[in-house]
Image (cartoon, rainbow, N blue to C red; front, side, top):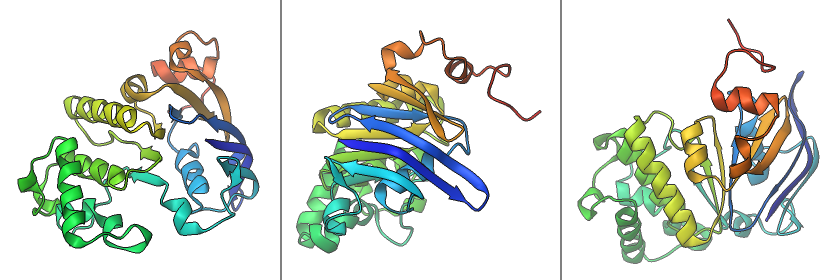
Length: 248
């Protein structure tokens, strides 16, 4: 569904993406792993058009992402942000229904609220949460609200940016399970960036490792542990010794 061909992006003298080639298959869950600062978030922003690549080409269903109508393009995507990114001044249901209350996807307010409550139920939150505000929720509940918002408009493609950051192991497991269930139910194409290997093993069909601005390795999740690539082995096992330089 998404193809990246020789994508480059620099910020001044810092070369972040150095020729990224990647294919994200339709209806599968692709997870990009890599250390902090390796360009994973920059890559997502390039796909969404929030950052312009210096070079290369990104296509969605064979069409350049910079062609066509922008709103229609973005309507195909849902996004779960790393920090939740909920609007403090909006109630929970208004956060979930954000895209349904404005723009091309606008619905009547009552219908938008009904959809929001149904999506909250889908992520394990009861209707009485709908009129609360983000500050009244735990971190795990906020993450669920963010997930409900990501799926509210029934997107074809969902991006997950470090979906379990800041969560305890049990809640992280709950979120991973929800992501896997929802992506499967919706038949959506999913793309996740994370350095949490428990998330990788829970939600990935395919894995790609981004290192030094390029895709170092990619393949089915079943082949990840067996690869002889020393960078992948060092990363997935959290070893201090190996080709990936660590600060000491």
